Length: 393
Image (cartoon, rainbow, N blue to C red; front, top):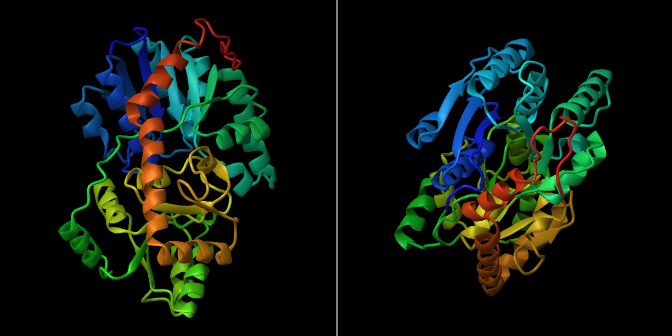
C-alpha cells in the first residue's frame, strides 16, 4: 500500500538491545517500509543487537554512541546535527531519555515536527517524592509541553497517566502492534520445550516473563504459588527475567520452600519465549499497578493462551474478564491463586478464553493494522507546528 505522504522519518530510541520497546519499534518500521515509507533510526547508546535486523530491511541506523544515558550535552548535540543534516520531516521518540533529548534538540534543529510515545505508568510506582525527582519531572513535563508537537500513549491508561502527571491535554492512543504468530500446536515441540525448562507434560505450567522489579509484583505471584502448593494444586511456574529484585525473589522462593514449584530463568530470545508460551497452559503477569500496554499478555493471547493479570492498566483495553482473560484484584496473592485454580480445574474455560483472546488480538494489534493508525495520525500533525503539543483533531 502506498504511503499517505512522502515524509522522511527519524525514530529515536535509547538502545537496540533485544527488549520489548526495541522489538516493537522493529515490527513497526518493518511494516512502514513495506508500506513504502522512508524510515531511519537514531540510537543513543549501545547495545545495538537488533541493528542488523533494521539494516537488512534498508533502514539506516545512526549509532550516536553517547557514553552514558545522562550525557545530555553530547546526545543533544549529536541528535541536533543529525536532524539538520538529514532534513527529516518527522522525528519520533520512544522512552524517557530519547524523548527528553529529542525535545532538547529543538534549539539546534527546530524544523522537524516531533512526536513522543509513552509506554509506562511509572510515576504512580516511583513517585516524585524527592527534590531531585520533582525537578526531573517538572523539567520533563515542560519539555514535553513546549518542545514536542504531538504525544502518543500505547493505551488509555498510559494516556491518562501522562495527562495527569505532565499536564498534557491531548494524547492520542495508538496501541503497540506485532506480527501475529501462528497458533500451531506441535506435541513433540511442546514436550521438548517443557523438558528444557524442567517441567513435565502433566504439570499445569504457568509462565511469567517480567523484569524483576517492584512494578512487576513477583512477590504476590510467589505467595500465590505457595497457597496453591499448600492446597495440593499441581502447578509449576517459570519466571523469565533479570533485574534489581532477582535475589529477593530467589530468597522468597527458598524461604517458602518452593524450589520445585517456582524456577527463575534468565531472559531468553523472543522466539524461545514464544515457544515457551506455546508449551504453557497460561501466562500470568501480576503487576500491581498494571502494565502500560502488556505486550507479553497480547502475545500469549495471540497464541490462544489464557492470561491472568490485575484489572488495572493497559490490559483493560483488550482483556474482557472471563471472556478473553482473567482479571483479578491488584496486590492480592489470594486473587491470583483463585484465578489459577479456576484454569486448572476447568480446561474448557482455558480453551474458550484462548480462542476468544486470539480473535481480539488478530483484529486489533496485527502490525499492519497498527501501522495504518500511525499513517492516519501523521496526517493530523500540521506543518509548521509550534512545538507546543497542538494537533489537528
